[in-house]
Amino acid sequence: MRVVLAVVWCWAGWAKMLAPAASAQAVRAYRILPEALVAPVGYGIPALELALAGLLLTGLRIRLTSVLSALLLTAFLAGIVQAWARGLSIDCGCFGGGGEVDSADTRYLQEVLGDVGLLSLNGWLIRWPPSRFSIDAALR
Image (tube, helix red, strand yellow):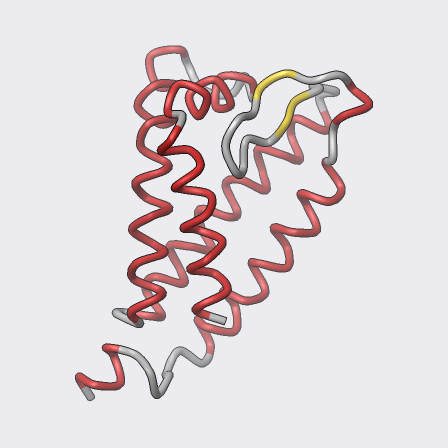
């Protein structure tokens, strides 16, 4: 489960890191944050996602990292749900890109279900964090 989450976070963070302006545009499309926060959040999210990926992959502070991962996923889930409820036609920007799209190109249900699935993996790791192949295990 750690590896699955680490791969997802790494893929998401790396894709955004390659196109940071697109990441900021994706944040802007949600129309939640004031313009002054769009760039810092858009440029900061990829770094946070890559940090989560590294911590999960190495197994350092698994429970804490899983809680942080779950909080970030919950924020993303809330953003997607509010965009859907408000009738915005956007691509989530989850794996790079993002921004406004035609209403036929939205995939809100798939994005919500994907985030719920990833949240369930985090829930498992929060409840049962030990793993034989982790830094946490080596430190015990």
